[in-house]
Length: 308
Image 1 (cartoon, helix red, strand yellow):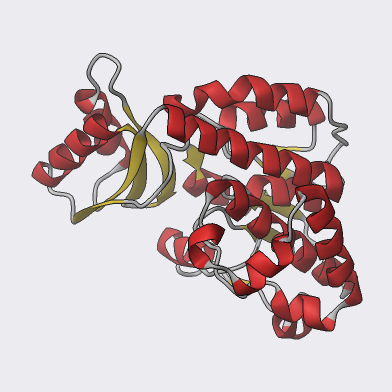
Image 2 (cartoon, rainbow, N blue to C red):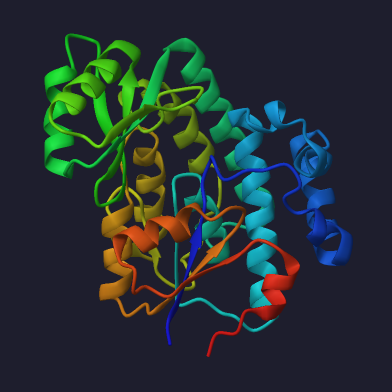
């Protein structure tokens, strides 16, 4: 059996995540203490007690999800559950790379902290939005985004999450035009999302330069096992390819369906969502209900998980 670890991204956060790990595991407590020092704030208390409104802020959400995801990964590995592959949704890509040994914990958290700050800043500087489009094909949604884009107002596909579920991103007017076009084209539903920026769109391009500088100054190791990257949906262990993909990821779509296809074609036959929430388990069910996918977000699930 070949197991793939799937790491969630922004939107999976919830107040209370990680608390049982902190309460029952000395290594988890030490990780949270290290994270608090790197962040220069009490990230553990924010994760455990909120307030929810503060935890939803991009620059805090991303580090909080990353920390609990990495702790869970370390617990799984310690218990003998070793992945053959990893991948992560957007932010989750940093968790996946840390699990594969590309980054150490401290470097990765510093990068995630910066990423959240840069994305939040880009969102303030260029107001944008995102929307989920349900019931239309990738091709149709991509064409609608082109039709909805006018001059500097742009709409693009941001997440190809599952068949018939695509998230679009960009300028407020362009995204809302694309939603209208989608409704007329027969979409089951269009939902504007409550986000602080137009993630994975050209409105995030301003964040790329500072992110590249930070990545260039960080040691990237060869991955211990293949990681499937968001931008290309290809498996790699090469640090240079990983670096280029992380830069491009900021203003490129997450090709999640293709990433899961790559895992299946590579021999993955067991999937574990490692981190808060059940978003990726839900996407896997919509991609292929036969995919054996479980979730681990609490200590009891680490103890119960058995991978042959």
